[in-house]
Amino acid sequence: MKIGVIQFEPLFGEVDRNLELAGSLIMKSDADLLVLPELFNTGYVFTSKEEAISLSEQIPQGRTTQMLCDVAKEKGIFIAGGLAEKGGNGIFNSSVLVSPDGYVGRYRKVHLFFEEKLWFDPGDEGFKVYDTGVCKVGIMICFDWFFPESMRALSLMGADIICHPSNLVMSFCQDAMKTRCLENHVFAITANRTGTESRGGKSLHFTGKSQITGPDGRVLFRAGETTEEAGIMEINVNEARSKKVNEYNDLFKDRRSDFYSILTESDR
Ligand code: ACM
Image (cartoon, rainbow, N blue to C red; front, top):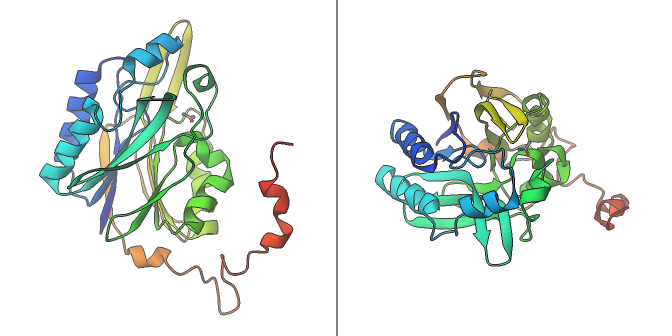
C-alpha cells in the first residue's frame, strides 16, 4: 500500500483557505492513506478559550470532517487530520479518520501541550485502533509522542501504522520517532506543519520535516523544513506484523508486565 504525509502552512482562522489548500494537496496525491497536520483547518495559536470554541466543529457533522469525507470518497482513500472539536462534554484537540465510505472515528488528544491546556479539554476517550481492511491504524497527536505509553498502547492494540498529525515546535520528535517505531515495530506518519504564527503577543515557529518512519527505525521520507509538499511511500504493511527481533526475542512476548505495574499506578 501507499502511505503519505501532507505538509503545508495553515493560516490562523482562515478555514476556507486552509480546507481548500488541504483538499487540493490531497487531490494531487496518490496514496491509500494520507495524514494531515494537527489543527490543519484553523491554525494553532489560539488566544482565548472563546476563540477555540468559535473555531471548533462537531465531529462528524462539521464542515471539516464532511470535506475530508467528500475527498476521501472521490479519491477512494483513507485520510487522518486534526481539528478543534466541539464535543458534547468539552472542546478537544482531535483528529478524525475518514474512509471512502465516510467517517470512521476520532481521537481526542490525551497529552495536551503548553497553552493547549488553556483552550482544550484533555482527551477522554483514550487510544483507539481502526481496521481499514488492509491495515490497522492508530492515531496520536503531536506531543503524545513524548509519552512512550501512547505508541506502546496503540501498538499493543494491534496498530500497524500510527497516524501522527502534528504542529511541532521543538526539534526532537523526528529523531525520537525512529526509536518509537523501532521499539514497537510499527510504521508512523508524522504530518507536521510549517510557518510561524504570531498572535496575542506570542509567536510559535513550526518545524516542518514531516516524516514517514519504518518499523526498523529507518526514515523512509522526510520533508523540507519550510516546504509545502506531499511525501508518498510504498510500504509492505506486513513488516509491522512480526515483533521478532531474532530467534530468541520478540518485542511484545518478551515484555515483563509483572515488573511494570508502576506504569499503571495513578499520578505520582
Ligand atoms: C504539540 O503538541 N503541538 C507540540
